[in-house]
Length: 157
View: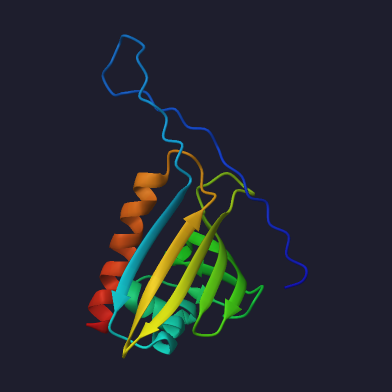
């Protein structure tokens, strides 16, 4: 892909424990990568079309999506809450995206990699999400389940 420059970085986060007056701090969460695998009852072509198709993505999430399904193409998901660009697309095999929630600091992107592995009539989606700001691990971990995997399992049965 040509012409796309991405800045990847992290932001330190060290939240205080609620209600404590002793000055004790919660240990910072330094995890900036996660890995998940999900089996879907759909061929890789259908999974890819759903992840890269504006209408299909909107249908399974219930929120507006605008996706240019080409390498270098921009996307806006969940009504603009997630934005980014497709960095690499290997049909029915891999989708790599520069991905960011719109509330992150400007210029902070993470890398989302979907590997699609066909098995029989289904597909295993292997997600590797890396380079996100420290402190976001738990939120992103549960977000993938709630906003991607649960709805996709419902869609594909």
